[in-house]
Structure formats: C-alpha cells, structure tokens
Image 1 (tube, helix red, strand yellow):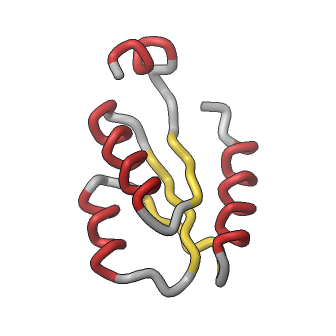
Image 2 (cartoon, helix red, strand yellow; image 1 turned 45 degrees about the vertical axis):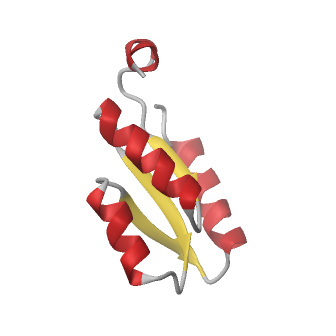
Length: 82
C-alpha cells in the first residue's frame, strides 16, 4: 500500500458494489488515508451500510439496481482526475 500511495498520493477510490468488494476497497482506502466513494443499489441492509461508513466510505445510492450504481460509478470515475 505504501508503494501505491507513493505513486498516486491523491488517489480517490470509486467503486460500485453490493457487498464485500466495496467493504474491501473502503478498508484499503482508509489504511492509505485516501477517499473512497461507493455507489450502491437501493435496499441494502442498513448494518452493511454502517460497516462501510465505519471504514470512512462516502456512500451514494446509484439507483434501484446494481447496473444503475455501476453506471454512476463509471461517470464519477471519468470526472475524477485522481
């Protein structure tokens, strides 16, 4: 992680997830001191959302379905230079 942080010190992690992948990315981002935005579909378990928040992730509801969240994540990544 230190090598990654040295190469990309301002990296902003952006992912669409409905489960463990988002939690893993949020954990890595927290350890690197980097921001993380997770795009989610509606209706996920509130306890799971709390777990993501505890890791410091910014949560965005991208739509009713995972495909909607994924599209929003792609849009956000395209607009983010980091």
